[in-house]
Image (cartoon, rainbow, N blue to C red; front, top):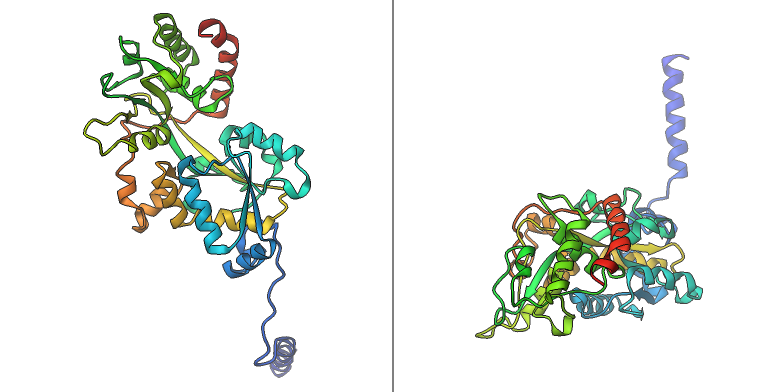
Length: 361
């Protein structure tokens, strides 16, 4: 081909491309909406189109999220106020496992759109979830999100000791709970309740390593000495710091506060709750809008006001958008946090199943 022929061919190609393009002034065609897409860009193109699709659905089905839990009531009210989408709540106090059972049994239109789960339950049920990477995906720590986007941490906390300072001295370690005067309670049965199980495991930590036997032995000693109590009668409660901190805030301004909270040195056990979208969500666009909202600066700070530690806390701080006043109210963390791996958790649960009832009752 001569140089002249090549130039002519390029001119013809350019003309053909121009002929296929939109004419001047013709509106550009928008991509079709896919409400079950794995990301906002590919499913909706823009936030405005996601909002539009979610508003057409009009409803969001939640499960297992009490309004008083880490300030979720304020989060829900803000979501509905901003987008006009009704929230239908099923069993607000359902456990993570119960959330999955509800989803299995619910009629299609009543099924949960999203879940708020312990990481262990999320990992075990990952195939039930629809992958979706929120816009702020990079801000969520790698250790608390599924690489495929099926679940991702939204808030977390540390196991703590709440206590009545009018009745007992501030405990510095779990071993202090064996001293006279402490009436200690767990937040439920460790064979059934995640908070109670993690309380036992926090007590088991030694140099950053968990060993269920140590935790069971401590609570067995408390039982034998009469120091193990029910929550309603206890002056000391082993529970997540956001639970104990919320209780402490109720009397924080009093001359003699009725409750304080401490994270014991050498026993800094962390855990996250995660979000996941139901594959069979009846309102898939609303589910995705809820996730985008939850991981936005405003909602993350609302969770922080509920004494939870939002997943994007470090990113918010770097951006200068962290609610510093709320962050200052969180209990101090004395040392490097430990998170149980799934194998460690499974091993510990097997040990408790075999030994808790006979050792503690």
